[in-house]
Image 1 (cartoon, helix red, strand yellow):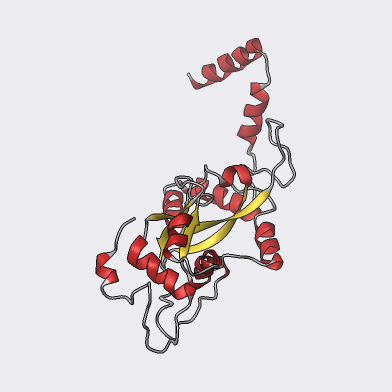
Image 2: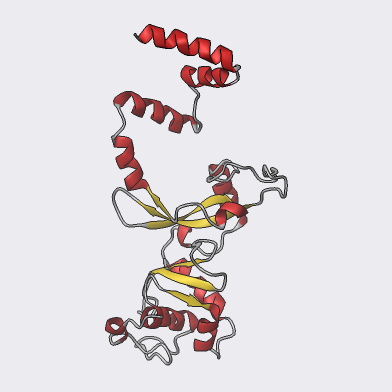
Length: 245
């Protein structure tokens, strides 16, 4: 782990913090100070390291999860495929909870736990299917080994304007273990859309508005062409090439 020396000199000691306005800082405050002072943004840590640092806190794992309600972004191996199962990563520090009179952010995306209504809303917005491979809940995978189970995974969203936010996306358990970019780069995506021709942009906008990709006549013809035998494909090829000469 990396010691963040510059910050640790300015912060209360996470082992026994003395903070004006707080009688006895609780586990959430202490673990936040530990993350900033000892771990540092962008660095991984293990559950063993966390529990060793706080042997007197029986609920320290819960106190760590509570920080997500305060805008702290902490990924596990499901969110970041480069992490081992026992590792987590401090992606971004949130509200400095060791300072008195701090207010908790209200956005749902920062929460570590979702209630049933919030889960239903997100699943409905994602059409109850994995946004990576498109499989629906209970649908059998092509290999026939198992059926799909959907989970909600955290993703950072890079906006064209404004700060990075954290939200949820619906994935199947297989895709959640790896394969989807850890950031949803809206700014980069829109920059790529800007490179399309006006005709292509209008067509793409219709797909987005409809929520599905509409197959054009050329794609339908290509599908029919692919089903034809070799001699029929050769006849079509000769006809098309003669027209272009």
